[in-house]
Length: 104
Figure 1 (cartoon, one colour):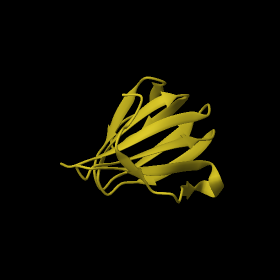
Figure 2: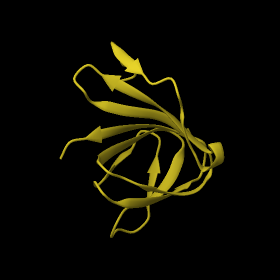
Figure 3: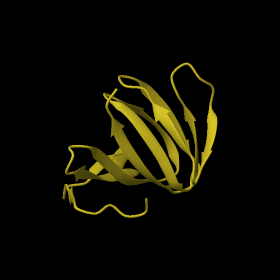
Figure 4: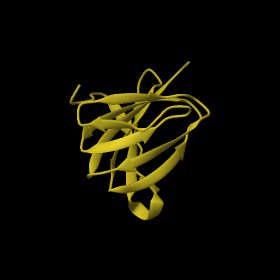
């Protein structure tokens, strides 16, 4: 899906790592939530509260999920992150992403 219709967008940006990772929150009528963002090259660690689906729309990175080895993720690929977990990213090129927050 390249466009989201009939949504609300939170005006304030989510800014992490001195502005190297930014996103905006998109709210849907059914109560679901996504963030759309951009990550600059670098190494980052994030923590989750909810299960997440990370879709990489452009760019390339490596991800290390809990208990797994590093894996390469390129534009057009996705990965899931479990709830209440930490994961690491090595962003190789500027990467555009969509993060969907999922109910278990």
